[in-house]
Length: 242
Image (tube, rainbow, N blue to C red; front, side, top):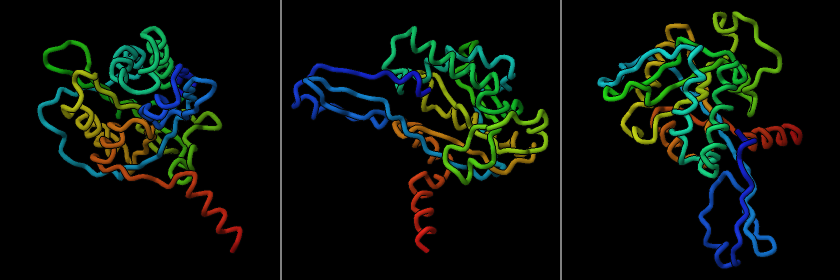
């Protein structure tokens, strides 16, 4: 998604520049009477230790067929309309960015799709889904090494069956109009129970520093933050000086 973050330039006075609200996804500079915002998206990795529990009542949660994932692009764009980079894009570019993200997941670019752990949420008053969760399989190194969530070589066809990686919460999204009603947590509960039935014990996740609601959602649902790149660098430095 970093390819879709736009560079933003605003003609401002220096005083106006200092009053701009800051977003963690951007670097702010003042050059020749302009505010120049350059994309610097930062992500964190977390993990959830899986335990079986009751699924929330009152939600219509259905399996998400892998073949139908491409049809989620419109919902994905609507759900992310108030987050970067979509918030800074016009509708056509935002739609293209959403389609790119969903296409990457649907075609295995984020790792093999773990179809039994993918679900859609429906509101009883609407025929179309209002939310979805998509889980993929990533290399196990993601739990011990930052930015290791991409397969360097194509995993074997039975990678999911043999549990050769770690499930990754690649996307969970809910329509902006249905947000904060518990759909995301209900989707996660169904995914967790499905993964436990398959023999998995952990669920990794990656979330953006600038997405406050996502950070809070992960925290509320029991994810713990894994050491980041800076921590690994310090550990490496200390070993060199021992």
